[in-house]
Image 1 (cartoon, rainbow, N blue to C red):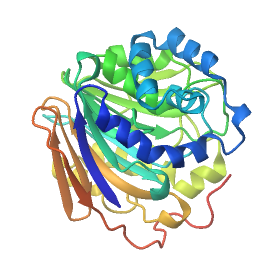
Image 2: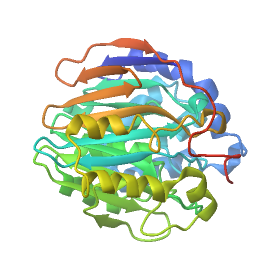
Image 3: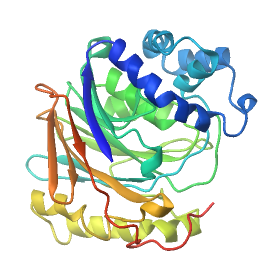
Image 4: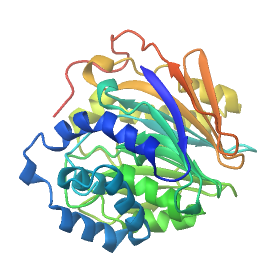
Length: 333
């Protein structure tokens, strides 16, 4: 996998070039169920204006840079996208200098492999891209960090793809409390768990769903279920309960030093090599919100990045073998 770290203060030619590069594959994904299945442009923009009005002007700018086409603009709204699943584990190490650590388990062929640093709307944000302005994890200049995991439920409803919701939170919120309020308010099209940590050590996990009110918890750990397991075959396939117990054990019964805790994410049962069925660990991210820093880690490799001194660059990452560690058989549907 070729990973890139790219910065552009305001939406411009660099972002437009990235969109041109990625759009053909995203277009196939967006229309795989037919063009008319997704909501029309005006409905999509109106939903964005209703629920995330602060970023509508930014959305309009990006649509223009993307060529102003109907399908591209609908895609960039992230409104009612096709369903998609991921694995993922995330936890807050609650020591003297709290850190947010996460594994992102997903299909390497459906991933941006891109870290974006932007200064949109007067706020600096750095994180792992999804959909070229959505984020699956990130940190902002207010010292707020967050990441997501799939919530382990089949239900699909009317709402936004969660990567755009994470972008919105980092663009508009400064504290964990503000983030929790936003995450509880904005409709999501599927179930996700979003863990948030701010520079004052406050943290929370919001269990979002399209068919019921969000639940705000003080949980320091999230894997791929919510208050209970609802999708049994998916839970078995991803070992979500086992991973949650493992993390809780390391945080409570056997409190690890920070580096030991982080390194646990690079080993089974948290680390997966199930790339052939779309649930391999693509990277481990470590967020230090007080320092406005992140690290992207792979076995034997650490890539440090700073919001204040961000440096564009690239890394070539060799994925391990495709023999699953804690997962077997085809992905459940």
